[in-house]
Length: 294
Image 1 (cartoon, rainbow, N blue to C red):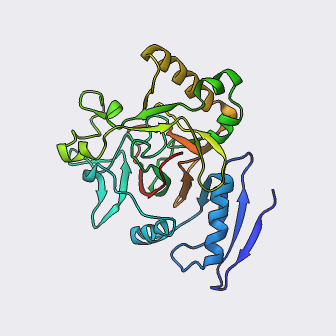
Image 2 (tube, rainbow, N blue to C red):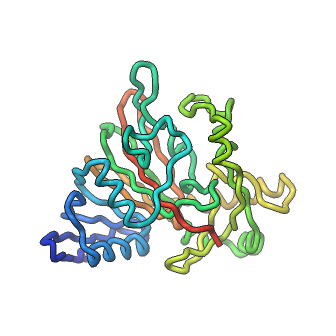
């Protein structure tokens, strides 16, 4: 598709460049350290709804500027792992494989499994923004799977099996004590455990802004389907997971220096592809609260 130019009265101008396929759009020439007027913001909001992943190139912004821009989309959510929140900016989760003085500086196994951010909350995330601070020279890609397309192409027998059903989402199912061989995630305190009590959401959700249906399950946080025997639940979820991440549903983002990527957790699940452990990778994440799925 051709690039579309947008000029804001503040004299900023930027291009909106859709990538190949149904997922992904680049915003080129916009400096988020400078004011963005309502018309420019509306353009970005529409791109986010239409393409689900918005890539802001070459953003030389401070943590506070990331927080301020993220807040234009809604209330920010604070991650339960307060050990990995950025000093003086609790809205920012440090995603990093870096270890200093024997201690991880951030969450090193973030995105290890396909997931939608904070689906284990009553109000899961609307979207997340991830700003690259330090990137490896090899690996480190992030994969996004289009859950609208996954629903649209779901075989009829699976559609009939899941319509009207709900599933349980749990943080501790993957990350409780003894299930984390890499030791990135510290044991949760009773206060933290109270923040991640398991919740139930519809398997097929309706996007509150674009009205499209999407699958809303993931290997990362979905544990079982309500009302089904355990073996049937496991089998059905395995089929949904496999269909969701077929190659034709997936966009792979190869990070560039100072990228900030904004994705829609109501439309996508995502996965960190990983990089060699000796190569440093650090990014800052803000997470915007969404609505209760319906």
